[in-house]
Image (cartoon, rainbow, N blue to C red; front, side, top):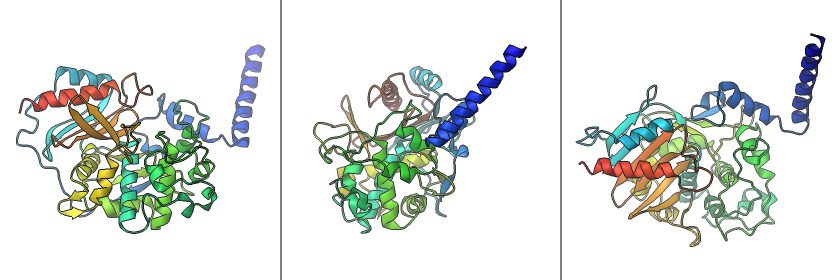
Length: 382
């Protein structure tokens, strides 16, 4: 019994010492991460995490623009292969939109067209839409404006806002999702996100090549907020959420109550139908119901590769050639997807808990193939 008591005592001392060291060396955000993830029964970040964070509201307007239902809405059954993948990977929403009408729509039990789930990195596409709007309104001069105009500490670098949007900044950022000591983990759980971002240095020549870094989009969001003088959720609401007639308020996770900086590299909580609006907006060259919300030239530039050597990315949007199809995509962790094939006037939306086991080894995972292939099989019945 004495031995057990001694073991418990020393374990308690060890835990206290580890916690103290985390605070001393400014790694206390790890405790917050552990509390949110492991203490809620998860092993990694999860799509229903927004109640555990401070959030800003992206308000909808008074005029809702509902998606029309296709004349054959939900008359085609999902394929057996799609059902298997949806169950295996915890899909919570799957939509096929054809000719701007919802052709097929499915939600998992306990989810609906009003359910909020985390966008993860789909928020990057939305943030670059905010950049386009800020340029259109004159808050930011152009894609070529240096970031040092907003943050003089980067005066030594030639990085532009366009470099941030196209993932070509040269920032010293390590995109690592599993290490609790990585800057990516710190960005997700730290309560002073701006400090973490501004500690990043430009160490490579910017504007020369593509390297996917979440810090790029966070710094871009900070610049947009500084340039417009508005909280990002408010700016998004006024310029997109309300004009596009979103059906529900959305939430944008913040770093905490004190600084209230939106996490633009991730973490807009909304529903499948409202996420899909951005796919339609870009498919229609920045126009929504006759109103030009984004400059068409900016949209065209966004969904084309910036670098010939990296045809998979434009400005905030992933680009994928699949067989004879050409998709531009909003893509988030665990396969949050809005995939647009403009020539076919098709939008495919998938939200869910997990992705296929090749995530992290490739930009475009195997489950995406399934969501595309089965959607076209189902459309083929029409």
